[in-house]
Image (tube, rainbow, N blue to C red; front, side):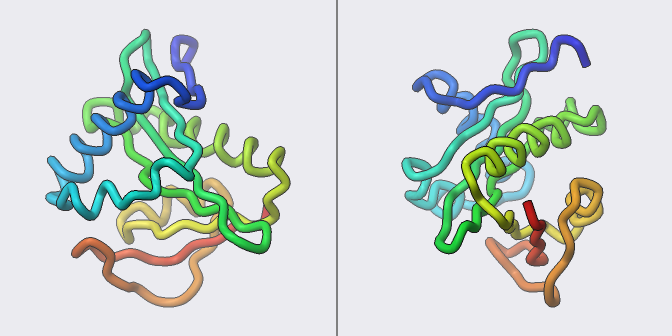
Length: 144
């Protein structure tokens, strides 16, 4: 997609755009409370913003953990733009940055309905299903 741009969200405006997407997807569509969605960890995360023709349409964040592990979180694409490989482009950029930053393992908690998507980006499921924010999830990892 020629007019799709994935960038690190460093400005206040870009961060607000990321938060707006998360509110629409997680709080609006999935009914996750804002208290759970905004967990106080945004300041220690790297944020990504997907724009299509200048319109903010997707986001993701990564959070470094101990032992060379980086956790992928809050990956969301606005409903009207799903199915166009925007999530894949967000993941590709964040994975490349994680490798460049020297992380050796990527971790995420996938909503069960999205686990197939993450498998296509190289993640493998570990263990069984668990609940997070009232939604079924599975733990997935990928060697970088």
